[in-house]
Image (tube, rainbow, N blue to C red):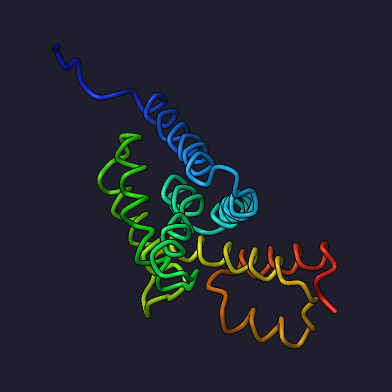
Length: 183
């Protein structure tokens, strides 16, 4: 087989768009009938996409990491009988790496997605824009999933202390207000 050169930019962009769609399919396949986790990951991806459109970030990395951020949760339950963040962060990257490699993702995408998954509950002092977008999206979804509404003062403190991005803060306010989660 003879290589005829690089893919044209429009085909390369289409291939990257297909990757994030294929990752979504693989996430659903992996979680099988765990519809709660599928819904969580799908919402996190939707929020991450909205945030990343306002902030900086590589949409392919952001969406792949968002879809796969909790992919280690079943293995954590199986091995440790726990869904604790540290176990998810330990078990998630090898599973994500396997999925992304199977889908022929680039090494750079695989490495960054796995890095994000490997500490997605524990931010470092310095973080990438991609991490910030995924972290804020997951935080929004976790706040949204809480049973009880959150009071405005507590939400203001969370917004100030925990969110990385302006887009994440804005989206959190909109989502939580729309869902009646602010008291």
